[in-house]
Length: 212
Image 1 (cartoon, rainbow, N blue to C red):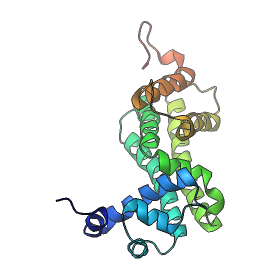
Image 2 (image 1 turned 120 degrees about the horizontal axis):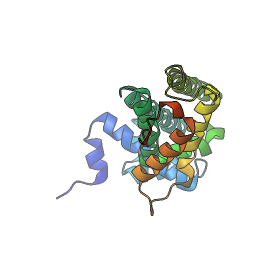
Image 3 (image 1 turned 90 degrees about the vertical axis):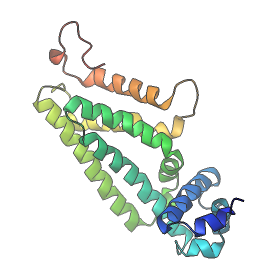
C-alpha cells in the first residue's frame, strides 16, 4: 500500500523535499498570491506538517527567497547548456529554444519571480540582480562574438539586440498556455523570428536556408 505523501517526503532526501516545497509553494503563490497563502497552506500542498516545513525553511519569506533563487538558476542553467554547444548560431538557437522550454517547465516559479517582487528583501533582490547582470553580459559577449566573426549583422547595437532577445522570451511565462502550438514549436518560431532579423545576410549561401 502506498505511503501517505507526508511519510514519503519525510523519508526522502532533504534536497528532494526542499525541491518539492519550493515547487508547491511557487504554484500556490502564483494562484493565490504570496501575501494570501499561509505557511499552513504550503504545508498542506506538500503533504507535510508545519513542523515539517520548518525543518527545511525557517519562514515563509525563506521559501519565497528559494523560489527566486530557483528562477535565476533556471536561466543560468539554460545558458550553461547553450554555451556547451559549438558555434555562434547553434549556441544562440540553443539559448532561445532552451529558455522557452525551461520557462514552460518552471512557469509557476517564473511567474512568482515577476509578480511577487514587493515581498522580497532589497538585499536579496540586489544579489539576484547581480546574477542577472552577469547572465545578460554573457549573452552580450556571445552576440559581440557573432558580430566580430560576421555571423551576425554589425549594424545592430549588440546591447539592444541582447535586450530584444531577452524580452522576446522573457514574457513567455505570462502568455503561454498549452494549446495549438507545443513548447518546442513556439521556441523554434521565436528563434526563427529573432535569427531572421539578426543574421548577417552576407553569410547566407545562395539557395541555402541560412540556418532557418
